[in-house]
Structures are given as C-alpha cells and as structure tokens.
Image (tube, rainbow over all chains, first blue to last red; front, side, top):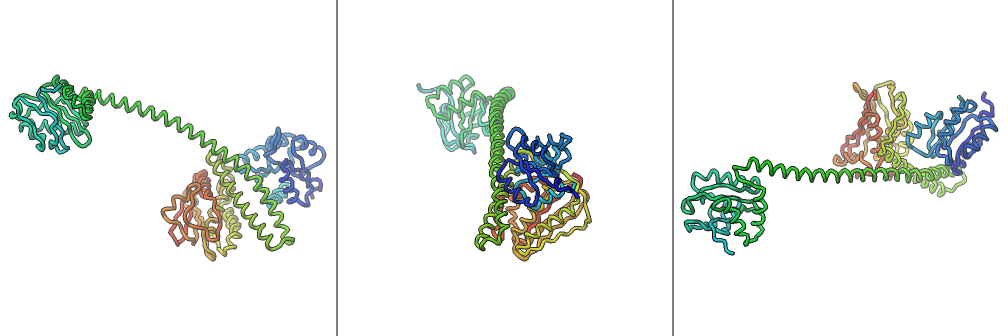
Length: 125
Length: 396
C-alpha cells in the first residue's frame, strides 16, 4: 500500500483556466499548485509528492522542459515521476519532454480519462 | 535622288510566285512582271542553286551573296542576290556585284519602307554560301552568347524570386503556427468547460443539453481544424519527427477499430477487422499511425449511409504490410481521386449526416505514411464505395 502522502499531486501550471480544469478533473486527489520555479522549490521542500504535472509552456525565465531537466538531475527529486502537459501538438515537444526525463506526455485539451489513467500509472510505479 | 543602276527588287509569295515588283532594270531593257515564278527568271542550269537560295532564306529567315545567272533575255552576266523572309513573303534583291548590292540598298533607301530596313539589319549578320561557314558560326556564337546572357539574367532573377518565395513561405508557416497555437489553447479550455457542464446534465433542460452538445461539437471541430493546421505547418516546416516504438500492429489496429465502432454505432455502421496474421511486431510512431487509422475509418463513416459495413483488412506481402479500409459509401469520381491527398481540396462527395471536414486530414495522413517510408492511395468507383490502402514496409 502506498502511503497517502505519496498520492499528493503537484501541478506546475501558470494558466488560471488550466488550474481550474485540473481541479475539476482531479476531484478526490490531494492537489497542490505552483506557478514558477520559485514556488515549485518551496512546495517540494514542504511536502512529498507521488507525481508532478508539469506545464511545458510556462511563462518566466524557465519553461517546463528546463524544470524537468533540473528536477531529474537533483537526486532528492529525481525519482518523482513527471507528466508533461502542453498545448503544443508538435512531436518535437514530445521527444524533448521524453529526453528531459518525463514519464508521460499529455496534450491539451486534457482528456479526463487519459489524465487519471496516466496519473494512476505513475502512482503505482 | 532617283536610282538608275541595274538591279531588281521583288516580293514573292512563299511558293515563289512574284506578287510585287518594286524595281526592275536590266541591260537588255527587259523587266520582270507580277505573277511569274521566281525560278522562271533563271536558266535551267541555275535552278538547283536558285532553289538552294530560296530554301536558305526560308530556313534562316535571310540569305545574301548568291551569284546567280538570270535568263539571257535579262542579262548575260551574273547578278548578286540576297533575300529575306518577312512575315509570309520573301523579298529578293539583286544587283550587278557585291559593291553595287550595298549601293543598291542605299540607293533604294528612299523607298524607306519597313522591308528595306529589315533587309539591311539582316544583311549585317547574314552571308552567302562561300563565307557561310565562318560567318554562320560567328553569327551563331553571337546569338548563343546573347541568349546565354539572357538566360543567366533570367536565372539570377528566378533565384532571387525563389529566395523571396521561400522566405515568404517560412513566414506563412510561422504565422500559421503561431495563430493556430494561440487559437488552440482557448478552444481547448472551452471544450473542457463545456464537458464539465455536460457532466451536470441532470440539472439542465432538454434544450440546454442540446445547446451544450452543439457548442461541444463545434468547438471540437474548430479544435480539429486548428490541430490540422498546426500539423500542416509543422509538416511544411519539416518537423515531422517520428517517435518509433516496437508495437504489435494487429493488436493496435484492433484497438483502434474498437474505439471507432463507438462512433459508427450512431449511424448503425458495422466495422469488421479481418487479417490472417496473429501478431505483427513493427517499429512505428503509434500516435501518428493512430491518427492515420482514425482518419481513414472516420472518413469511411462520414461518407457512408446508415446500415452499411466498413471492412478493415490487413495482409502481408514479402516486404510490406497492406492495410485497407473499404466502405460501401458513395464512391469518389475518378477525376477527383488525385485531389484527395492535396491540402484544402475537397471532392464533390458529401458526408451523409452533415459531418464536417477540414480538407487537411488526408494530406496529413499521406505525409505520416510517407514519413514511415510507406505509400497510400485510393481506389473507388462512384456509387460502389471506396478503398483506401496504406502500404508500410515491415522494416522501416
């Protein structure tokens, strides 16, 4: 049995609409939100997470791809599975996200079924 | 100034009949008259050379410096002949000798008509038989250099235009990509939010459920259109990157058919999948091949009447796997088959339940199949249905 704390999901997403959509789709999950690198590190220090949802198209100095690379090269966080989320449909983005170390790749608009399926897969691992 | 020297200036039709005598003066006092054939002015033994002269004029538009003997009734001495082809007539000039020929030309300059000017212009570059080899080649050399210069300039011009066009095309693709991306994001949100309202259908009136359904299907269509545009712009920018994975193609297509059956049920269309393979491991980009299969099957559903059958088949030949999607739909006009795989082109075949098309699906499908080193084509007959065939190499 996984501990409840492992079921926590950290969502890195700066778009308000997307946050609302995740909140609605993931009712029943313990969610935590952050919008940038700064708040991400804060959240990671505060708690343990079973999975991270990372928006690739974050505004600001570091985009989602850079953050994935950073987390994957930090031993403390490298084992947390990351699901990359993007509104870009180019397969190049998929390749880059996978290369950076993302466990899965989702394209917006998010399908609720696929989102939950993907999260569950990551949580089991 | 009136020209009084001996000479001849006539115009003939292409068959050699003289239709105009501009000037005619010989030692004998005899003159040339209209209606005669040009060759009739010559001795029997000169006729071969005269005919050569005419042929040369016709072939090269002009020829000069021919020494020919007229009939004795005109003169016992040879005359120098030159001729030029202007429109549909031959103008011929003759004088006692070469020096006289030029004098004669300037002498009759008072006639100052277009034909004379053309004769003079051509006389500079044309020569008679005895000098023709050297002068012909120098004339040809000049002519080829001139044409070559023209070609070089045209080529330079074309290269410049090509660069400009390529730049414009890149800009167009960038713009298309940006516009589509900026449209796609909010459209995705609208779609998601509408889904949430739909989940609460027990709190909605029948009419509201219907409206929500409309918003959902319209935003889905727009989303597909914009996604197709993005696909096209990334394909055009050469960004069709395959993510190859080893998968069982039989299981994969079976799953895809199952998913599409749900859509087909609405029109009571049956989808069969038949193959003589149990499994077939292949390296493919599964998202992209999924897009291909879904496109072909949804097209078949779109253009088929209710209560019909769609057959999906898979077979192997020595090196390829051949996947076919056959419907019992309306078929496609033979003349329109080549439009199918071109962007934004739609055939006159209409969907049977008002389903919308972007006109981009098959173009994208073709590019995906080609990126897998495969081929796609369609076979169809009006009213008898269509078959779309994808052939993929087993080892990419």
